[in-house]
Image (cartoon, rainbow, N blue to C red):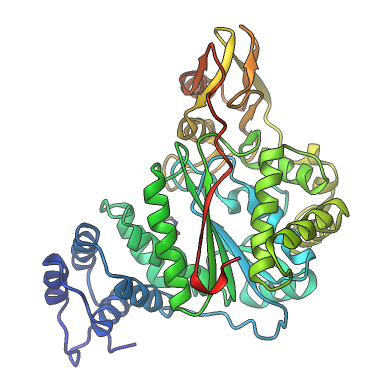
Length: 451
Ligand code: URA
């Protein structure tokens, strides 16, 4: 990387800000100067913020996006997992409601012979976070050292942890600044943020579950496709195999929303039970992981492999082992009743008979946050037990007074706020919806891994 913002540097931050403000393409050296200078604390927040805003408004070229991702990746440690001969493959979702596939996919892919070094995040906005879900398992720790991470990977093939101080520190700083300067939404900055963290895991291949719909950050399909194409191309330019299914987030995935509830639903899937949409998406994403990892000749074979691993209980065994290795209570996996349970439950009933034709999915996620299942402010702690169980989803018939969903809560005042939001989010009509949206809208593939 080029010299940071010391006196010997040929650059000045103000010139790079001006250049981006005027819509010109930045050179590799200029981007590297900005990233290393900001990470080292030599470029102040106000200049980094001005540059981010210029980038959000003007956009970046594909080449700039790749250089930015690379500079952020190399701002910290890049794990070298070459001691593991098996292919190293991960999955990342852009975030949704009831979006819990990681807890099934990591053990499922590991049971099939892949190494899954998964570094995940916490809930963001109305969406849930893998780390918050895992921490609802009594004793489970997501804060492993790199040495412990390797040990868990060696023993069970997968490990699930949070971002450490060493991984992509530039992203940690930029992300915090973006959060308070209205610059989160840029697809180029999202791409660099996600890909720098994921590629620091030392993986060979990555499956990106790019969500679209009322519960996703990318509400419009074309925006999701744009981001997916950007991430696939950036990953490929950096020598990785990347594929990005665009998947539906117009209603919560599965029937459970909330941390321990979602863990319980994943355990059901791993036992061969649970809702069809969640199982189908897990199988689809696992199939892509096996396909990219080279452990199946084609997608059909990869899917059958995933089905067999679920049915045989091997994925479940791997999950139980990973939980134990990361300090979690394996009895809570054998008996999910031992996971944190909310004290009270309240039904939200339908005011009329008809069919559920839509669910405003972001509102369901926000209702869960209000209950305490996510954070309204950064410093909030999360209540692992609360959440929502959906009894009716899009296309279901309902009679007047029948429960649409149940709210599981610990504070009545919060439950009342959440109930109002949930009532407004269900749309009931006389006729069923004209068409059922597919779970996978389309798949964006790189040139190197077409099926
Ligand atoms: N998730 C990330 O990790 N980064 C972003 O910029 C947006 C979502």
